[in-house]
Amino acid sequence: MLRIGLTGGIGAGKSALSTTFAKCGGVIVDGDVIAREVVQPGTEGLASLVDAFGGDILLPDGSLDRPALAAKAFRNDEARGVLNGIVHPLVAKRRAEIIAAVPEDARDAIVVEDIPLLVESGMAPLFPLVVVVHADVELRVRRLVGQRGMPEEDARARIAAQATDEQRRAVADIWLDNSSTPEDLVEQAHHVWNHRILPFGHNLSARQTVRAPAHLVPADPSWPDQGRRIVNRLNTTCGHRALRVDHIGSTAVPELDAKDVIDIQITVESLAVADELAEPLLAAGYPCLGHITQDAAKVDARSTVGRYDHSDDPELWHKRIHASADPGRPTNVHIRVDGWPNQQFALLFVDWLAANPGLRADYLAVKRTADASGGGDIMRYVTAKEPWFRDAYRRAWLWADSSGWRP
Figure 1 (cartoon, rainbow, N blue to C red):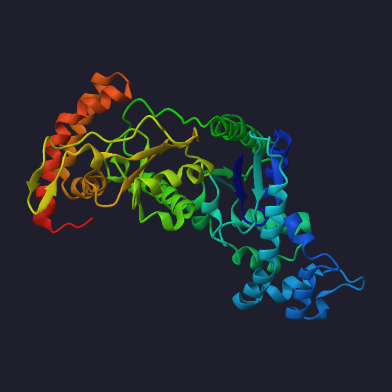
Figure 2: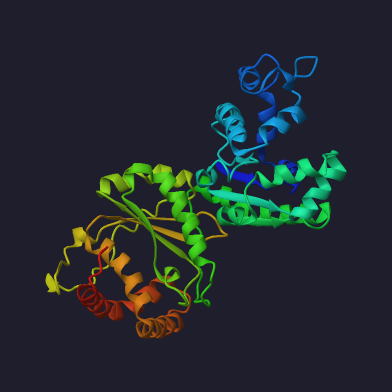
């Protein structure tokens, strides 16, 4: 089962997008619908709201007067916090019940959770994929006033109380612009569903990963932001079992051309802990590559470089590796043991290259030669770089010794 978080500011078009995904076959869990359900007459939620905001938020028939509640709840941060503290836990509980009711044999099910305050609640890292629908503020105000009859002042207050576009961009794996026609949004939605979401769901149920890009591409300035988003997701997935999670590899080095793959390292206490993470990482969108269990040692025998002792003991170069099932974001997730040479070198390598422009140029030349000789074969590409890496290993640790670097 693939779980998708769908969000966007009020008036941006979440409902329209959710409706289209439902027609494509998605199981929709609508946060707005649930939020209304948990405050129906006779519910714990409505009683709590009356206790907090007063009986004048009720209509004569005993149901919730939403405009009256909004006038009180959105007047300041404290009042909004009270509202969220009452409603959010109830919505989360009901959402969990709906998801749990999806049949166990529905392995290919794609659950789309429409959550208006996904960013504000800090829930984005819980999802393997986050879709944000966007429209600029003035367009949203016009929609709220013209289509919902909302007073302009209230519309602007509601928008101001939500996350900013920058905050939503930080969590968005997919960004859909709904500034044009409804037909345009439907077309975008179908394309995303057929070319990314559906293949992602299929890969996840089959426990298969996407192929890494074959060739180098120019450095993408968005790689660091993408890395941070994945790091946040994996920190949430791993919890206390991860000692640290880092963006590593070439895409973590500023202005370095690379294959368009985000490499992440999860540091753990032992390989036993790494094995415990197999199922949580699968649920997060990263099946295990069971046939890869170690890195190639970068030293030929036990040696000392500066203050550091190094070993070619194969046991100290073991790891686990997972990769993304999402065709839109190839990712390798390396799980290595704290203090082992492969774990430390992965961290050192990024800092060493970032601090030395000449070495970046040298490494890029090696990468381009390997890329040309590899012909798109990833193993030939990796093998072609190994001789350079063995010398780089020694030079990087000498730099670490002289610069006072610490992992």
